[in-house]
Amino acid sequence: MIVYLADKAQFLSDNDNHEIDEIILGRFIKILGKSVALSERRSWRESLGRMANVLRDEGIPPNTGVAIEFQIPQSAKRIDVTLSGRGADDEANAVIIELKQWESALSTRKDGVVETFIGGAQREQVHPSYQAWSYAALMEGFNSAVYSGGIALRPCAYLHNYSRDGEIDAPHYAGYISKAPLFLKGDGEKQQLRAFIKQFVKAGDAGILTSLASAIIRPSKALAESLVEMLDGQPEFILIDDQKTVYEAGLAAGQAASAAQPRVLLVEGGPGTGKSVVAVNLLVALIGKGLNCRYVTRNAAPRAVFKAKLTGSLTATRFDSLFTGSGSFVKTSDNEFDVLIVDEAHRLNEKSGFFGNEGDNQIKELINSAKCTIFFLDEDQRVTLRDIGSKDLIRDFAYEKGADVGEYELPSQFRCNGSEAYLPWLDNTLEVRETANPTLLPSDFDFRVFDSPTALHAAIEERNTNNKARVVAGYCWPWASKKNTEAIDIKIGDYERQWNLDVDGSLWILQPNSIEQVGCIHTCQGLELEYVGVIIGPDLLVRDGKVVTMPRARARQDQSIRGYNTMLMDDPARAKRDADRIIKNTYRTLMTRGMKGCYLYCTDVETAAHFKNALAVSN
Image (cartoon, rainbow, N blue to C red; front, side, top):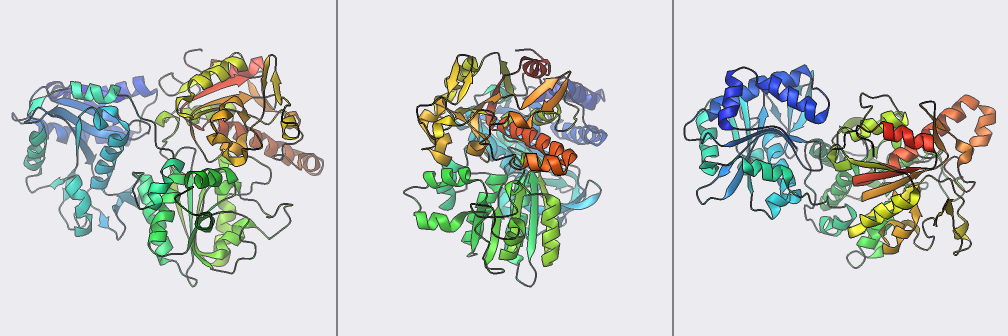
């Protein structure tokens, strides 16, 4: 997706008429359905004016393609300026230019990270050259016009207000600057940047940008499928922007922490923001530094999937020494580990053990067991009444130990087709929280509402070309097939299916025949699919335009709201509030497993109409 696309001649004309920011804003609103902050409009006006001055060179062809705000496939990231044309041998080139208005920065000892004043405070940011290079690298991995269509990407960064000072161009950034040249104020930067552009654009060709925007997008690499290579030291995932910042912070904290000065990092990120990607990259890197590390999750499904993928490459003993459950630290000595990386930390429980009667508190035990503990969490993915993982509780136990606490956020969306609108729309539609996204555009995400579960399941089966599409549901039907393998669990009219087969356990999502069954929250949380089909049962209804949750509509075997009836007698308001949030969070989590699309069926007609009415174009 490109917000503004023109050739050089038109771009210069729009700048000369002092309308470039208004034009881009209008197209931004039309395409994305939202506006931008005044600060971003000012940056368009100033930075694009500087860019126009660079392009005022007869050696740069007037038909050179110019794209402003080119959205990187399957992410919410946008490239500031992309120029396109043909090189000396008629090769297709796209010049990626990261624009910054920075006037100063401080170098850090972290790889590819600087500090600069932004958002009212001094903050860590990725180096502009790293940012431009990582955008190009991400495109090379996903855009078919690049990886098989012959379009070469040429990244660089232009800081038009920044004079050379030995900080932004410190020697240890040289590797990234060589991959994406850095052009600064003075030193004839306009001439140097012009020379860089003219090196790759001998003849203009705006069609190259159209090819990039319309190219087939290869699905994102699933984390589990690349773990073998990652553990062998292969950079399977390019970390960009906030991911890189969090990774470097975790790497630094893990190496600096000691028993005398422990560290706790708290990383918050919604579905598809790369929490697990960063977590496993950190595991690989810290192990490479010779540190005693563990990757910890309460949910067994991600660990089981990783273990299956590593069969033949990593012994079971070695795997179990790297990946473990959150209940394994009840009797661990203080600071026994250098680093514990806790993924899906929102799923942590207070007690451990099969009967939930061991230990004190899993959060406390994890923090006490390591010199450095790194928690990745999303409080909106707490899906049982026993889930206690919260930022407040983690802070409390960290301060109790005397640890330095660092807090970070992963805001960028890499699932749900990189849509910035889908998650806010879903939160608004499920009434998790009110947002400014009451409707969803067809271009934002492939979301459909089906009138029958049979049609939904058939559509997901059609999408299962890579064994990456599954149907899941709220736990509203008893699991009869657990005891009788011939029994049918889910019956909705003529639609009859079994729950996820017990024989597959946590590996259900990988099994080819599991497309025939229906999964629950415990089979897919922490994992991703290309397409997910979700059946909303009678535990979530819409009445008179309001979302109403019905805890007693859950199956008796469902453990997620165990204790609800007792709580209802002791504290009715809290019981209803907590159960309401659990049910909404469950469906929010199920409906964000898909990288490419989410298909929905509701057992209740009024509920289905609620979702249909929230779409800009009805299904």
